[in-house]
Image (cartoon, rainbow, N blue to C red; front, side, top):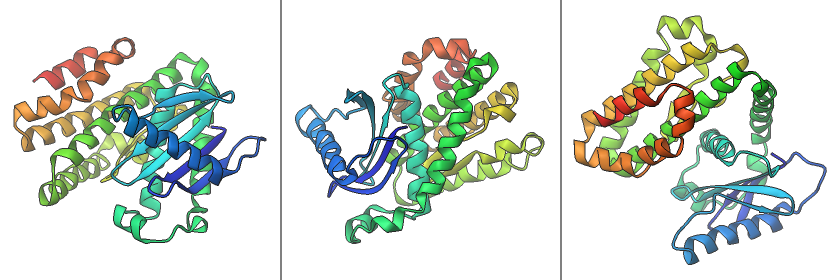
Length: 282
């Protein structure tokens, strides 16, 4: 990333900005422009959200979280993979919301204080360093597979979290979140987690999952694959227990099935097609 913003869409104000380049921008001026583009896309282009645009020699990747009113934008090299950047923005969003205990009500009522969010710079720097280390390993086929695995499952987990937010309310929602949290807690007590300490970085909260922060340099591909598949199996079983088949399959078709079709070649390369098809069509 060359530039990064967290923007409160209701006021177009930049809550947080980080510059990783030698080129200086006015973060508040640019945040207003970026927010206006997102609003135009939503209101005038049949509610189609912007995913990425290219201008001024950069790729600008958008991640809009309507429920919180937060817009995350990363300006990257044109060659950057949009799907990878989107997955990273999802992780950053989750960590930003959790660090400051944000809610829609709090953001709507409190006067914006940019200094309050300045400490997030340390977390963003840590994530950026980890991702740069991973990118250096991409010339290795083993490391590439591990990074692809992390990316694929991060995206599928994100789709699950969207379903949970949309389909469950109040007490049912809290029960499902608690049940999933308990699953991860139990997994972390398993011998596989204890023998592979890096797996302990896998986290879950009401804001979603985080697996893309794992360090591929110290992960075994087969161990990681088994772990991620096991988590996915538990997630699928939780939804089976709390949703009837038709609404569950209908929810899957709007996100998960579409993603699996779009990523079929990658899933085939990772030897995941048979496993995922078995899991999601039963």
